[in-house]
Length: 310
Image (cartoon, rainbow, N blue to C red; front, top):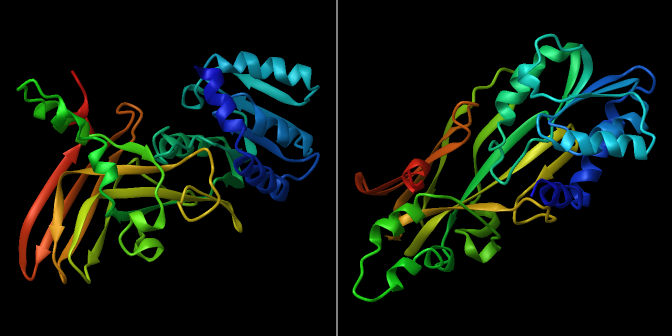
């Protein structure tokens, strides 16, 4: 349900406060014009108006924009202009001083935020401000077995039936999960940055990156955990890390096809390919490799397209 999704977002006080503080820093009362791209129920645009923006253009393609208009009237929010269309479809947008877009998901790019903001830059006056400014993705290795075991119920169907094909499809998907420090190789220290999008420059929706770890001890690996940190403006950040204050977003679990037994001094690599172009929606590929000395002794490649029933 759209309304339940919106309720869940707006119940996130950490999110709301961070965006409010960012807007407070950049809006010049009576002067700033702002575009809220993917405005949903309208909270960020309403906050911009209350902070003194002279005009707020709210772009939302879904029917929730009708509720947004009703809420604006109900709260006597002024200077808001509602555009019921995807921002990329608007041929002649009005130039603004600030673009704000909260089109983030548990996987940071899943709502096409890169493509959306890159297109919306044509709305921006020279020297204008984009919120968020930067998104950084992190990866850690999962050593707790329960995340993998939860997905292996296909092995227990019984009745002398083989559901291994269904299990393979299950493992070629990613899952929203909560991780604790003990679930991850080296805990907090084991997290590595695998991608950064900086909206001050030009960015593509095709992304590649990964992490590498040399192991101190024998350990079994069960997948990868991914989270993001989003810098709204300098000094104001949101994060889905398991080591900071919880938001309505959580971490993601990328399974292995089979648990990987590693020895001390082995080198483990996790690599990602991310495609969040509009025509694709979202597709992720991930690969685990294990190197022992100079030899590559294991490789597992997974792809969300293999996890879809077609």
